[in-house]
View (tube, chains in turn blue, cyan):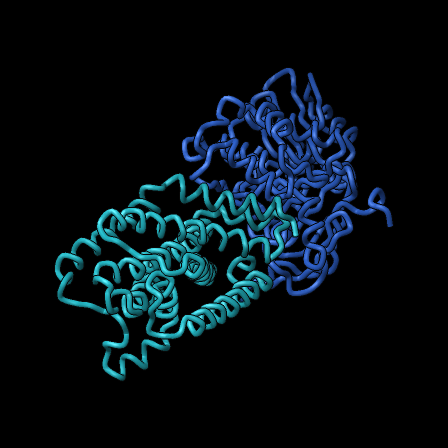
Length: 315
Length: 254
């Protein structure tokens, strides 16, 4: 098999147990080259365990993991050369400056005289003016950017970002995504875990949802979104709404002044029928809109988490 | 063998201690010189361990080796435990180092620090007392062997430990007592039979005795015995560290 048609990441029947916790339970997953892939799941679902196993930071009990066709155990040197990982925790070596950190990291991968690429990374991640600053003196957001630069310093074809925007301000998050999108357009395979589900919805081509150490969904983003149970009908009347027809009362999500929000089940409800009933109840409709289920709605439905906030999902 | 990767990690480990040179090089040299001044003042003219060798001159190689031993150990153990506790270990776990590259880089840097403090003690000591050098090759050989063994032992401790106080315990309850009881300040020939026999089981004794032979051409044990003991320790510790690295013991499975 040539490298061009090899999967970027191939995970086969991977299991890992930590004492009483089955962190991964027979996980199978393939990420194709050039994909922008999202790995989502509640806290403790197994995302970071899977990424750590892929990066060789922990050993699995059974199964195999490959990066660009190289086994992360038997062929670990080739596998690690092909992989860049941005860890979830903000960590740094406090002895060195930003540039020294990147030069050392480059050398660890066997690359000398990498200053042209390091300069570009510093420029792209808005770190150029901090290159001679000690790592200890950087803000959290800047340290996060250095972590991204460290993961990219050896130009890996596969980049794994483990919640890279946690605790990062909006402006930095947007510039970070612009850079990651550019890397993706240049052919890098990107694997992203994030709690910001709207980021996954906007960026990813394909999404896997992991829960209790098992992949419970693995689909194109649009197909996954289509699995949502329904959507929301928002009706604005010309006058304040005082009552809702009895047969629609159990669908009411919100009633406030002239605005009425109703839940729609994609297989059971007809928008036209609902509007007819509202008109029959003497409501004069000014405006109608339909809001489809978001990835967060699908995520909550699939993982059974009633409170998105409880597992960190934010919008 | 990826020499660029190995050399980079080696250079990084050297930079790490050079950045805090006052603490890692100057302080131990000063401490050793205090021993020379205090013990030299108290015991000079009262004790003659080797014929024709003043006590202070006798003391210098022992103190040099003691400083070499403690600093070589500190270099690898403190680097690893700091990386573990601060989480920066991930930066050396993600790259494709072979186990041997990783080992050589850490132990190489420990040897450099060991030699740096050893030379520092020597340069200051010769201002105070004449120290003959019988065989410079043996001096360098034992300095390197001692640093190598202690750098490797520091890796064992750094990999095993999960907290700073475990490293401190390793130093306080193992390294310091074994160093002080290895003949730094005396010839083991002057010990009662029980302690004499016990000291011969102390590996640090062979580091100091062989090293001292390089200066005076006299030692408690044949220099070849010391060399073989050190080489054996070096081989055993190398195999232990490589097996830790291969299995990922306390590095990759946490």
